[in-house]
Length: 68
Image (cartoon, rainbow, N blue to C red):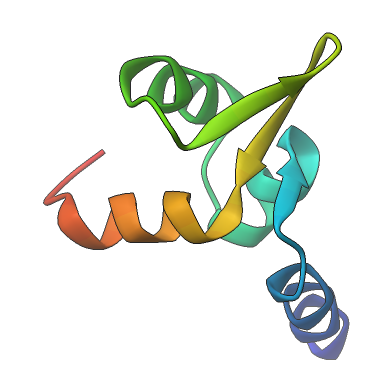
């Protein structure tokens, strides 16, 4: 349990999260995360071919959704 808290603390300081980091941080599976990033503009970007999630923007989006 402490390890999960440590990981969340480290990730909470990052501006961009990789898909694998975002899965751990938000508890959302990869397919759902990718679908949300396609559906809502401004919450992700590509670094080459690598999808990156803007942590703060994604958190704001989740705060405004009733379900995902």
